[in-house]
Image 1 (tube, helix red, strand yellow):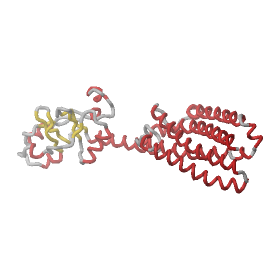
Image 2 (tube, rainbow, N blue to C red):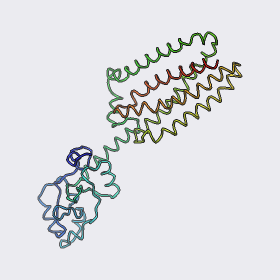
Image 3 (cartoon, helix red, strand yellow):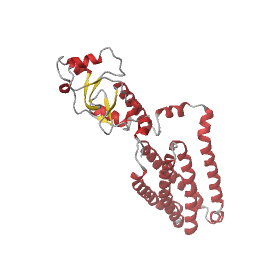
Length: 324
């Protein structure tokens, strides 16, 4: 658990945006006394006055209401006695949300004992809102940090583009060569029944397509804070059902067109198995990249394709060897 001191130094907390250089008055002061305390002094922000008693916050008063009040009015009668407050370690997004929900021009930061720690002025609240808006837009685009990284990825020079992409494509090349080795290992099966080879691209493509759909869904979910646990069961079940439907559609077509029931069974079972496994792989890899602090948009796609292709080819040939 973070200590209060650590929380105060985090850049995304309320304490990082609060300023103690704001007008502070007493609830027993009159409006004229409060104005005299403010005039001639320089503050970080004077839009809201903190009303305190022995360093404890008892209310907030906007400068507009102070200026409109009669001179003899008591601050305790003018202030908001129950303003929304946040603790120093509160996340900046929560801070901005509190301010918007209560239509406050400023937000008081109060520690666990009720002691006034500072006020987040309107300009800081606006900056936080803009920053969070920027981050949310980036997340909707599939980037897990900020739109600055999105712009950098779009405008970076050719050398950096190669550096970001080529390693994963080299992994893909290795995967393609391994797939060729796997296919070569079933040369006897292909010599006995060449029809088996006809459906290798189809099985691989279907598994890739289902995996790509799952991967896009998972990356979008991660980018907006939806954990893998919330989608895992439903997505695996969806992959199984998609594989079953495609297998049921492929089986009669292969029997009618090519007249080979055994190959039709091999293709159908392989579609079911490869689709199910592709879904699991497509969920696991983006989650792993996210846990490691890497952007899934760069590496999980190529790596998932390699793993899915290898598994799809291997599954198909194992099933075909057992059936045909």
